[in-house]
Figure 1 (cartoon, helix red, strand yellow):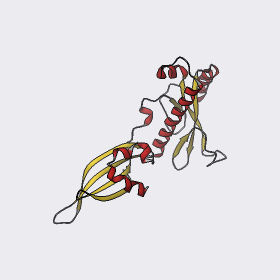
Figure 2: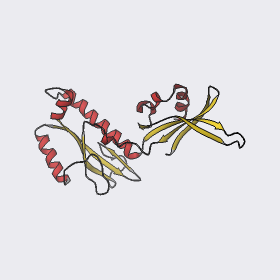
Figure 3: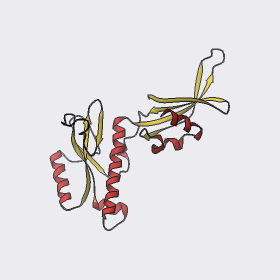
Figure 4: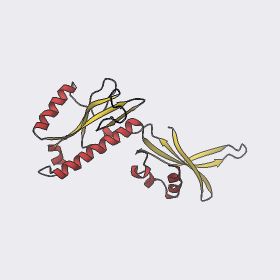
Length: 205
């Protein structure tokens, strides 16, 4: 795993090192218990969730029928493929106005029937619909972090000099991974790391 930040300090008379690393073994968030279903079609990449649609045309026809009955909440999905891939729900006009390197690859959607089941309501109110759209957006944001490799972990080590040779050996004291995004407070990483490291981390980032 690539180290993206490393700081050292003395704690209780011991020399310690905290490293923040890219998590190369992060779980695909589409394997979680998500509200939305992400259906994508791409010639080179296997994106989103597993589905049974044989073509984009078949899926769009399915989605169109649900939309005509006002039975679905959905957001479009766009993929930008240039020195890596990134996904959003609004397109990438600011990077590529001509659309050479990006385009629509699918949708993330949830039926209103499932929304009623999950939220235990009889009707999907406008307010609840906005809440659901925010949830779908958050799922896309998390998946985008996964695609871009913006998933991190930390490792805390005690640094011990080897008597005789002077070589520094390290012993792992604590470690954890699976934190999405560079905002370590928002991702929950800071709440897992002992507080004596927080100030040093904030100074570095």
